[in-house]
Length: 216
Image (cartoon, rainbow, N blue to C red; front, side, top):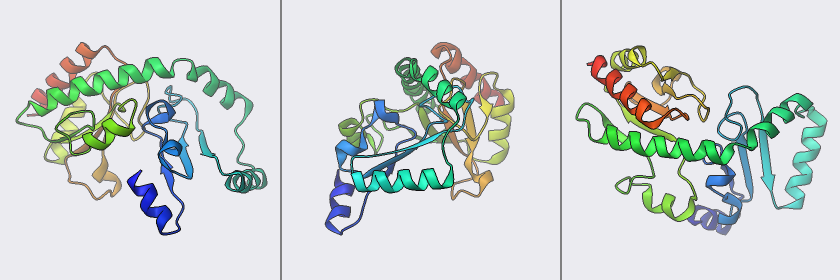
């Protein structure tokens, strides 16, 4: 709300990428945003089997402009892609609930380990983002981050894990992790973006703990 208010006071539009939160977790238009853009490839559909994106606005002018652009450029999803998305929406609430539960449990486990630093998940009361997240999010996403110190330790961790796949996408049924510095992101060498899947919580915690132990 604060960003939207400041932007509108300056005469700017506000566009929010709501990919990670999804519409069930956060409703940016209700918070003052003019436009919501998001990937439908990730948590919204969650099966990692299609490429899709969407734009939402309550402004008729912005909607018509975007619709004209889409029609002109041909950026219209195919019938099968739409069917896959429609199939996936039926389980969205169930998937997000498990994502959140796994992320909360994993964040607690990581925060308690002396060999892991920089744990960030806005669902933890001691996280700097918690006050805002708890006020405006109906469900905290299953994506968290932490630091393992260096590239080698991240590689050993991923190699030792049985449930965590190395992948840049997130929000799917399967747990994934990505060392962002390898793509040129302005992060430390050991920074990991971690996306919790829908695996059994106890199994995921045991696997991550064992992989961290094995990574040294």
